[in-house]
Amino acid sequence: MKTHNCTCCGKEIELYERYPNRICSDCYELPKYDLEGRRVEFSNDSELEPLFGSFAVHFLDEKDEIVETIMDKYKEYQFTINNRLFRAKEARFGGVVIESI
Ligand SMILES: [Zn+2]
Image (cartoon, rainbow, N blue to C red; front, top):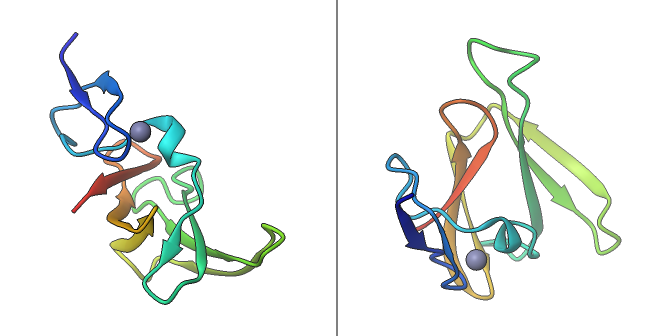
């Protein structure tokens, strides 16, 4: 198995050739803030739109409740984890991939 180091915490994880800068699943769970300081999470519900995907950005309040969802507007979305810049985008075969920029 080829590996690379998570671009957020440095942990060794499996290398996906298509996403050489992706972060690990632990970092994926960390709080994310967009460039305006809002809590954000992402989802990609390809089951609803199998041909087109549907990349969604969710904005959360301080209780982790979703207060707003924007579907299909963004191809990718920039945000920070621990003040480092990342981007989320729809993964080719479903789900969401997060990469360092
Ligand atoms: Zn990590």
